[in-house]
Image (cartoon, rainbow, N blue to C red; front, side, top):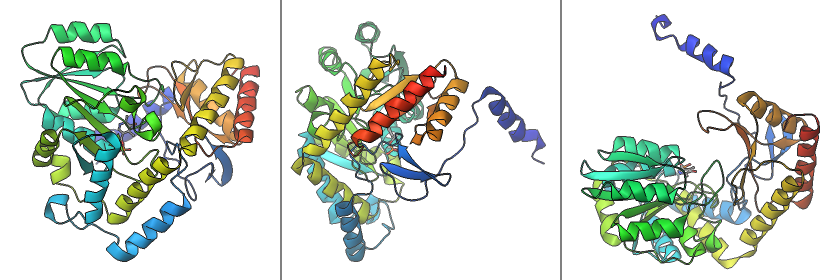
Length: 387
Ligand SMILES: *Cc1c(COP(=O)(O)O)cnc(C)c1O
């Protein structure tokens, strides 16, 4: 009965190409050391940049909120699923970002697919960076807008394309920090261009929240005001150690989204304890600047070690550090080699990226010896021809 679907044929083909994906689950919490396949390894794979996923203060806050608010939300925000904590978190994010109003989403994926589809009707042209996250690409597909892809971080190309399309509403969409390469979008130039040609600008701050600009994101990093035409989306699931996402900007835009976004209207709200964790996490990074400082010190330590070895880390400028390898097979071999040495760093292959790599992410909770050990393991990999 399943024959005509040929699931097995498809899977065999993937296996033949070295592209078969497996889910690898941890046994225990996220953090500096994780246990996978029964082995404890130093973890260079998470987006838990500040080491907050298993933070004691956040755990206590979650537990106490469960006692006061229960475990489930039971309905969408529009039908009583939200709490006063949801409202409080939205106010805190608006203050943190210097924006007028914020709306929460259940995930970054839900925020991008929902908000982009809601914003862009058939009279809209979307200018999208070619390396934007899959959730942005899917948001564009769900929208009725015309999608024009510009070359990665190429503002000259973007300018040409915008100039050729001045008859419709215009929106530029870009990751602030690109999730697989770790480079930062040319934000100053993009903001200027958006202003000059009367475009909305939608920034995905998934990897800049809690990382750049004292945690406040890329605009703060470059000292740029959150202008009325800028919409910022960010996640609570990466450096904030929780789950969920937000979209923040002008009140009229956020109110429009509340009225139009299907992933918000037709999906159960996040439970209060997840929200309380995000509140506490933002307070924590505002109070304690040392975490972010340590993150960047660790990043510099690792990158300078890799540079000394002559290892190609692409365009990385952030704690996301790709180690570029020749092919898919090479990415798997390098990842397996590192695992043998006690380090967890996943291969990322085509089609997620064009150039295969092992994606390293360094965090604030890595210790000097972890980083020295990883550098030495990579030296070993280079010496036996894996790099
Ligand atoms: C992870 C990620 C998302 C999705 O966020 P989730 O909360 O994990 O759904 C969106 N955009 C970018 C750039 C991301 O890296």
